[in-house]
Amino acid sequence: MKAARDLVEKTVASGERIYGVTTGFGRMKNVTIPPEDAVELQRNLVRSHASGVGEPLPIDATRASLLLRAHSLARGNSGVRIEIVELLIEMLNRYVTPVIPSQGSVGASGDLAPLAHMALVLAGEGEAWHDGNRLPAAQALAAAGLAPLALSFKEGLSLINGTQVMTGIGALALVRAANACKAADIAGAMSLEAFLGTDAPFDERMNALRPHAGQAHVAANMRRLLRDSGVMASHADCDRVQDAYSFRCIPVVHGAVRDGVAFVTNTVEIEMNSVTDNPVIFPEDGLFMSGGNFHGEPVALAMDYLAIALAELGSIAERRIYKLVDGAEGLPPFLTEHSGLRSGYMLAQYTAAALVSENKTLCAPASVDSIPTSAGQEDHVSMGTISARQCERVIGNLENVIAIELLLSAQALDFRAPLTYGRGTSIAHRAVRSMVEHLDDDRILSIDIAAARELLTSGALVSAVESELGAL
Image (cartoon, rainbow, N blue to C red; front, side, top):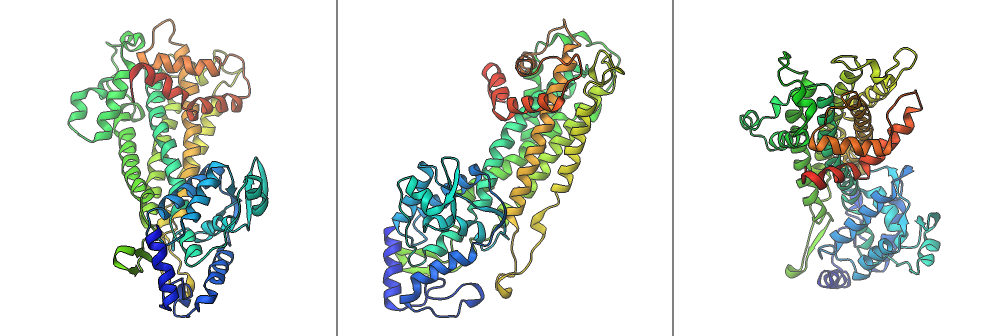
């Protein structure tokens, strides 16, 4: 970092032209800025680019963006002072979180508008959260024992030129997606068991004929979850030939989603460890080089793909939910002993259907759009931050759908007592029942759904099962 910074200051002192340091930005790249105005240039850049609108980003997404911005600058190819990264780190350590409007980024040159709101706080401007209070940035920094920095040559540009907001949102989305995939396998196994489905489609020989990694993984999970199930054994010789696709194709569909998550994880991990500034500096060569590393296309495509994959996970889960309330295979209609007088889980399926339908609209890929900016200089952009934000909403809807399936599958399994459940499904059933009791009289279902969602999103459900079965 020091070598790159020394090169910046040496080059400015020599009067050489460097994009965004001694020139204007975008279409104004040919406007020369004298060295004595270079500091004002950076201040003006950050202020003018802080043009975001809408609700603030969630605090966890903002903190992720701060961390990734510090990490990228610390690679030593941006030419900022070490103090800039140190302040970013101390803001994380002391919980000074910039207020960043969620809308306004087109995904190239990176997340300009949201990162400008972040950069403002380093300079003591804008707003930040501290101790749960939304304060003027200077007050938030002072409350945390920190002092703002006056941005010097290139530092404003380096702080705002990058993909850290879309990547931060995406990284957090992937953590939730990995947990949701495991929970979906658990819920699917519970539903199949309660519906008296067959475990034949999970046979290792069957899935070896189509050797996608995710498919094999999910089939193995289903075998482990259902092992030693008295419910499964009770109908081993029944005359049903095949189950509906939503049961029979769990390894194929859930597995394809897992493969999608793995692909997106690889893309996001590369992006997290990348330098996405412009221009970049190679101090060992004494070189400034302009390029397009700030373009968010890799993340944009990955986030759109992840949203589509996770929407499918919710779609097949909703079909299993529908089967459970349909009054088939000896289960009472809507999973209530008193159907007619009571509605049971009727409306839970409605909610799942609404969430799945909403996810379909959120899966329209933002990355296929581009609107030229900066008077045509920036003539193709990624819309990657929109992709990431849409994906985050898809995951939230999916978590509620899985929560609903957990509730209904646990209720359906109650009707299979005193038969024993599988090794994994019995653990999951106990976990659900520790949060939500059997539905006898009608009650407010949104409370139960929220409890099941907390069991899922906290990781408690997956942890309980994995503690006995190993990693899913």
